[in-house]
Length: 258
Ligand code: 9D3
Image (cartoon, rainbow, N blue to C red; front, top):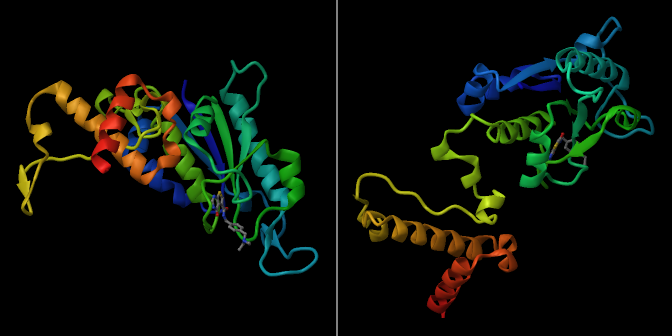
């Protein structure tokens, strides 16, 4: 069934980036997923359609008001309920994108992607009135330890990462099971890639790749993936989970480094 993603955002146009280009656009056309943005400004009831206000206790910046966000969440939940008739009374989770959360991992993306629908709440300014978060948010997610201007890019990162995992989105050649952080690859980094010409800038393509020997090519790629992971991301290498073949390759690598 089509995954239903609702997004509460002051900047719905930003989501054209994933709706209009690439793999995510194709999957949207094929109804693998659907997107509906809700602008809290459309739910503000005062004359000036106010969505933010000054923080109690003082300080710089503005805080997003609870009520317009509350009304927008209600609209999104209503839409999800109207669409997901066979969901056994479960309602879509509300996900708040915030730097005040644990950064998401590949495993987290896979869990999220299993949900039939999600509602993403994007903050701007200094943040959202805490009472709205306490009352309505099920899950808080960060995408990493750096500062963005708002939750929109983070929501798009999550949607992009989820959609490409969904059945039929990637072809078998670019299969998600082959990805760097995929459990099926022991969370190793990717090997390097080459295409024509055979010599460019005085640099030749590694001979192993030109051999036509599929076993040799596979071994070379696996060895390179292990070498890179050891060098660049040793934190990803769980030696206790490596196969006998991988451990042998790792020994070969460490021999050479001496
Ligand atoms: C200047 C405001 N900052 C005071 C220390 C806090 C702050 C509030 C809101 C910092 C950034 C943001 C906007 N960021 C997000 O909404 C966000 C985010 C991020 O900045 N980094 C990583 N993941 C995420 S998810 C949402």
